[in-house]
Image (cartoon, rainbow over all chains, first blue to last red; front, side, top):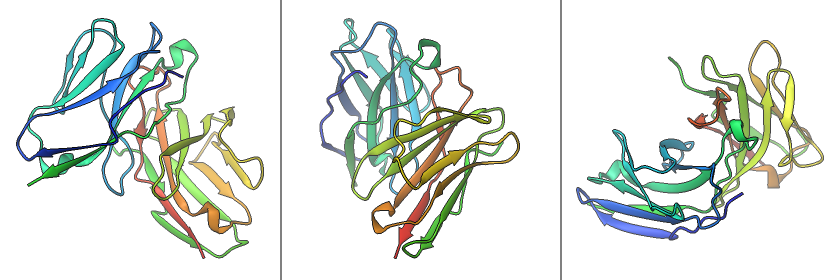
Length: 113
Length: 114
């Protein structure tokens, strides 16, 4: 499994953009970069994933470095409901014989009202 | 279109009793995964099952823990002779098995051993 490095914690003001970084310098060429988040007392929730190009969905944007050794999850306008632990997970998926998602310690995001 | 359903949400067992945790995957999902989260710790993979088969149980404790996913019905995680150290949140996830689109998680079962 590729090793990831994320800040233990971050704070952001409500309604401000948030940039959550992740280093995954040992990522393999076939691994997608997945982001999940876990709200308090909830199961993890899929946020977004990408391979090489930047990706947008209704929840967030994902910016992937050209060398794929790092990525940044962008929440464009944080709300109190975005307070959670965010996990960056390089993952090949079953097509590549690597089924299980492996969670690291993630980044605990606190939103300040 | 219900998501992954886990029950019960909360389970209290005395030391030495058995705990049975149930997980119904999303409709159309045939792959189930169980994770454990100890208090103030991260999510740890336990076992991956497809219908009637255990694919990867590398994260399962060697004793007292077992899992199944029968042809009909939910997946069951069974913990025999529970001890206080088994107190944790147990999460189930499911997927289609095509991989790229990730897992859908349930809300978990919080097991407390008294």
